[in-house]
Length: 194
Image 1 (spheres, rainbow, N blue to C red):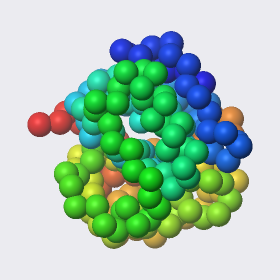
Image 2: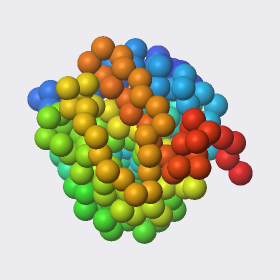
Image 3: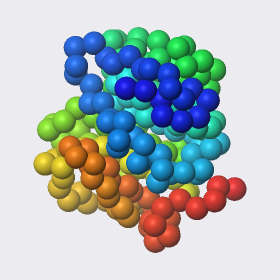
């Protein structure tokens, strides 16, 4: 696992000990950031169930203004902090040892441009997280997006009021599903940020 592009390009990232995290493959990560292209620059990112922090760190490396990492595992939090220090990106990051659902309920700060959701597999946690985000539209910037990383076998319909799916991409055992407010989804994703 490595940082693919940007200021920390080529830096190897530690995995969370014990293999409990759901890492994104380099192929899927590269494709994800090709989709986001220059849009990530200056963005505020929330990496939920962050594991090693690979997605949020890639965003920082490519110019995101700030990433908040949330994971309830002490091992994951220590791994994220080590990876941020190794990549010299800790100045634009906040690492929270917290339950992701509780974080979503209590968060009162600036809204995010990108919320990335990659919980442990086969527990329906992705659906619960998406519904929690949908209940609190203020978590997301007007033109913001939510990306859910699941195994294709976990895919199922979800009823949402404020968000709708606008794209999905499969890379082997990684399915990325993109959600946004209806007006952003109608444009097939985020446009220019103001």
